[in-house]
Image 1 (tube, rainbow, N blue to C red):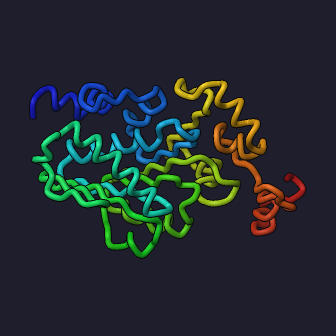
Image 2 (tube, helix red, strand yellow):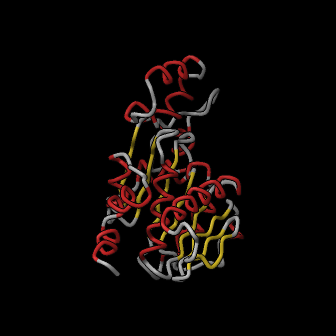
Length: 250
């Protein structure tokens, strides 16, 4: 490995800028450079969450031979979209695809033994995999809790990373629980739409006119909102399920 490749292995942001022509925002740079094993990204729509994750997936596959990278989304279409972004980045690394053993719709296998596999949000599709180097859970607030639970034991015997990325989807589920209750092992990243230079104030003003306030705050400002028209709050339901929580404090 050349000195340049060694530098790129240690600095994925440098590599992304020089090789992929991808220039990550400061928040994405902090994710790419962080050693944190567990990352949760509560980030606005159209901020580049999936693009950042695709770059990380390709970096892992190229510079760490034999890596298994799993991309999990609620639907096959969503998983396939992130996989297409990964392949587009790989095109910049290897335009002739000489380093590819397999290039299927939902699976990329490199000659160094690394694989990037996109999977839909069905628990039965996941249990055959073990010791992934990286798990990317896209649209995590809409991935079922059972599926998330089935992912975690895969990391029991290695130092693989787990990255959750999403906008909120109410105050229930593992994405909300980890964001509000996750401990110091989690790197928590929050980025609102007005912090993204590509999203104009004019666009956001127009969106606000065409959404309910709850929808607007959830989609663009990452607030965990109650479901529209809910009679009882999710906090009240949690207090009833857990006697340690007093409903009087809600």
